[in-house]
Image 1: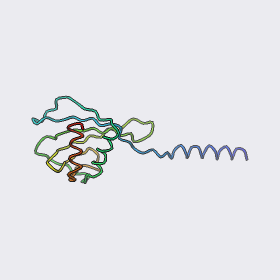
Image 2: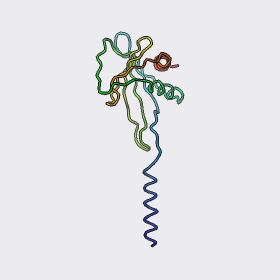
Image 3: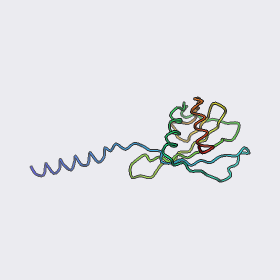
Image 4: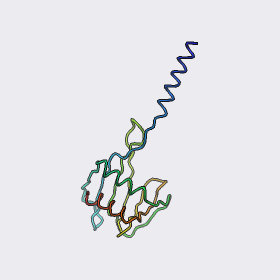
Length: 138
């Protein structure tokens, strides 16, 4: 009887340890601004402020994605951003790269993630917020 109790307790501890409520978290973003001539001056900016990251995440939640779509753009992107996302507890962050073109009141985004691919952000307020956070650092 005592062995059964010990086994039950160990099993419960194992199950509770495996079912953590860990939510993926965006921990930082690296930003590379691309010059008008299509070159990168090698300067990267790091965004780690929680409020700024949340604002960028909110803008990204409004993107309409077309998975498995490859886009051909007429000009080089305005910015390349790398998202650092902690997807599992006690594991290294995963990196996801996005290329973004700002075109007036819209933004076009390409992603290396298969379930995203090509996307457009058409909410004028979100586009302006995203552009100011990534390009001007506000």
